[in-house]
Amino acid sequence: MKLRNAAFHALRAAVTLAALALVVLMIDFSDRTVFTLRSGERIEAISVQRTGDSYLVEVEVRKWTTIPVDDVKSREERPGLITVVSRSRLGPASLVLPAMLVVFLVQAARWQILLRANGFAIPFGRAFRITWAGIFFNQVLPGSVGGDIAKGLMVSRGETRKAGLWGTVLLDRLVGLGTVIVIAGIAMAPALGRPELRPVVALIVALLAGGAAGAALYFSPALRRAPWAQRLKNRLPFRASVEEVDDVLKTMHHAPRAILWGAALSAVGQAVTILATFGLAWSMGIRNLGVGDFFLIQPIIFLVTAVPVSIGGWGVEQFISVHLFGMAGMAPNEAVALSVLSKLATLAASLPGGLLFAAGKTRAGGTP
Image (cartoon, rainbow, N blue to C red):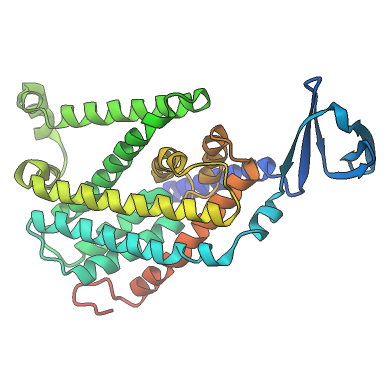
């Protein structure tokens, strides 16, 4: 068992390193100027000098060529990664940290509503500290699943209804993911007329259809009464725990208001997160994408990085950001810089949660 766990950890570390290596290959650290000539030819230059009626451009180190000004159809400046990061404005960027704290509070409130709906009297202070610590572990463990496992371990310690508490963590995650998909579905409408975003739209439609079909099948009374389903249920290991988790997942039946309030809070939290990312992009001088593009793309990034493939989503998030934001017109260097700075901001905002866990403040009776 120890050997298997070590192999899984080594595999995740390898995937993380491989993804980061691919991202580094996508990055251009030097500033470039792209000339599109009237003939259709494209020329990338690492430096440009204007000499009368011509441009003297350096296409490679110490390799120069001349382009007549009249032959140029368009000229595009593509700043390197260092330039993109260095032009960030500290004032607007600093608003990301308090925005993240608001999101953490909203997530804790959502979880507490689901806890109360299932008969768990967890004080808001403890729910917030556990949520904060769980978000920290999301940054240092594989995907969001790692943070959820840490969250479940923290809340169930010393409790009798352990399976039910784990069920609330799962339900909280499902409510969040479902809300993310709905937000993307709403943001999809303005993108229907943009051919470059058709792959994103198709993916969102598939997620909406898959989520709806999965929920319909899981909660189908006819399917639950089927003889084969009953036999399968009776053969499941830890049957009592499975039934306890199932009862929590059926909160939408015995406490629909809790689900609605949870979804509403989730929408607020996701909106604040997306707007914070948009503000960070704005502070970096990324102005060619509208806020609607972020509401369309960021939910997919949330979903992809929730899969426990790499450590903290590093590498995977940057890779997918380059491709998805690239479809909307963001340069690869800008997408990588935005993703890295956003993750560093989230890590900084969640670090106190890790310290609270280390100090034992997430246990029952712990004080801030």
